[in-house]
Image 1 (cartoon, helix red, strand yellow):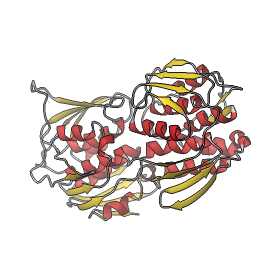
Image 2 (spheres, rainbow, N blue to C red):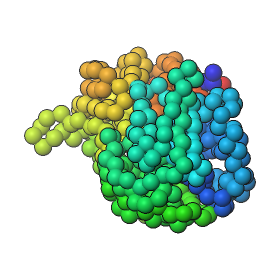
Image 3 (cartoon, rainbow, N blue to C red):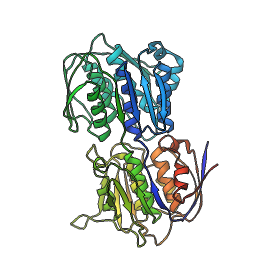
Image 4 (cartoon, one colour):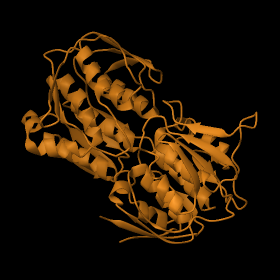
Length: 435
């Protein structure tokens, strides 16, 4: 189990560039299975979860060549479908939540798709019903091996249909969309997710020859085509990383510039941080955060009541940033309620912040009330264990702001989502060592 040793309480400065978007990468990489032609993808983050998926594709028979940092070509012209029934696949696929999105492209192109029950962060229940109900509506037959926790769908031919998703699932929408682009006839997906990463997938598929309308809305209409061709795609910067660096700058009272953030794809993120009192300045496509020497003050609602920050489907705030926002609020002036609607275990790292001296009341599994210190007392260094990717980075930010030396164990969780995070933080002055 890897460990970070962090000497906190130091101000940082300089520039940091966000990696490619993890959540987009997991969708885009699965889409290479939809064609036998070459697909080139740029700005792929070098992180554990993405590298696991690339390895899975290679084991499936996809020919992969690295062109340079973050740039690869993929050619899925000789897929080994027998691998899907192998013990190795059942083992490898189980360790990656994003492996579920292999099913839609495989079903669309080869008439069958299988996946072991995927793992991932322990942040609460993340059911797969939306995915498989969509495939069934397209004409697939579903089977499930309870002993091996192994899912499968098969179809001689997929046929377009109308469907109303029971939830605006990002991965569910992506999976169904990738199946529908090669289905016969027209598919309508209502209550579709419309996050920028999903829009990116749609744009890539359209360049490959797919016919999709309604991109960016919650109503997608797909007219199936016979086949798709190759393309080149460049991924967006990771909005969760961008939010993490905003929070880091505020908590450590540092002057930072976040480079090439794709401002127009950030949605509510700048607005929410401004509600916490954090100053952000747009400079071209960069975010400049000045040194918050006098701290930052949370805005109340116009009637004076306490602000609530909650996650919601896009264009609402992504749930992945709520743990960062909670940590940032511990040193703000004022109070805020953090409402995590989607996952019932994602706030369960609060006990570690309490050990550091934060003033937080965990109201229930979904809500926490935070009373900020306004930097009148700093968080205290401690030893802790990272429970998941986002909570791990939140605790890392807390440790960088705390006086003294903190230890964070289980940093493999952080490595699943953040590329060379210790090296990049050292470059802006953080005192962090991997031990």
